Length: 395
Ligand SMILES: *Cc1c(COP(=O)(O)O)cnc(C)c1O
Image 1 (cartoon, protein in one colour):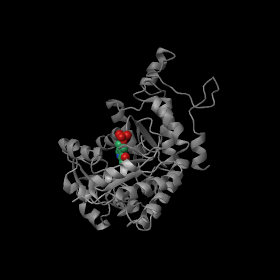
Image 2 (cartoon, rainbow, N blue to C red; image 1 turned 135 degrees about the vertical axis):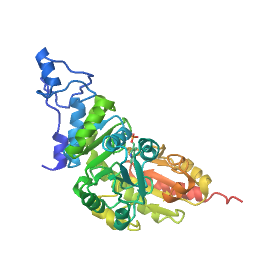
Image 3 (cartoon, rainbow, N blue to C red; image 1 turned 90 degrees about the vertical axis):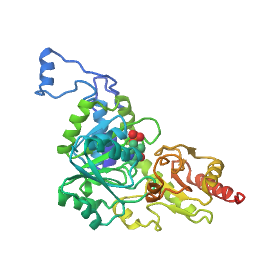
């Protein structure tokens, strides 16, 4: 069966009520039929749920579905995407280890690597997403344990070559860890390129409707077992309620990602024609510097488009004021189109040279293209570009 059939048909076992839609197991703990069963569950001669910090049927249903979509053996769900990122690093790295990472990482992932892991004697080297195989090779140290990347990156939409990193990790026996939040398994499956761990903020496209926080790590069982121990003891567990919401959302992930991507491509193409837009960046535009790689490892370009406008923050503010449809928010991955100016919001805390390295200019606008009618979006964006371009020149 194809994944889309399996995702619709994967569900926790029916209860004696014979419900059709999946039930919600909103319970902190589970009972024992007898003292003997309690003993058997604890000494693991019998498998079963004990306590929702360890496992829960609603959470397990969500994890099973993500494993299926990501071609992965096993997984753990967490309360947020950041708990998933942190668990994937902290459960497997130890003092003296070295981490190799792409520079263009989600802000909090960067903070974990530079401010938290560093306190525990875990060092790192950053490389540009577009660094060559030789440059990645040269950065591998005797104590390098893991490679951690995001592709496409936020907000630069730079790609890392998954096949190349897969080769590198196999050659040097490194753990290959990918944040696949922007593409989702509907568009890109890193495990097929040798990834050992795939991390998600389920808050974004997996929910896709701006309702709940969540995270998940899936991958090879030999690594996930360490993450399971870590999460069981430290407690970043996903709420069964959020898992129940997210499990249902996954049924429409493929449909939504296809529509997000076709809307995003149409909007990017229209804005690229506009004389008052300085630049448009989208992986599936032929003008993207890594367009060929995008077509190799992704089935569509995803929801996020960035544009650059001339005229500084004043222009950005006028543009945002003129937009009628999109929401102004720092989040992304919603049915509703969202725009943000990374320079003054999500990436405002970066140092000026870090902003330059990541291509975060004052006039950059990140658009998370939603599921509204695309002709309405194009009309609205073209109008806002034109209105904001006709501002009197500042002297
Ligand atoms: C949002 C995001 C995260 C963090 O997820 P939360 O659910 O907000 O904790 C991690 N990585 C990427 C790429 C993200 O976009």
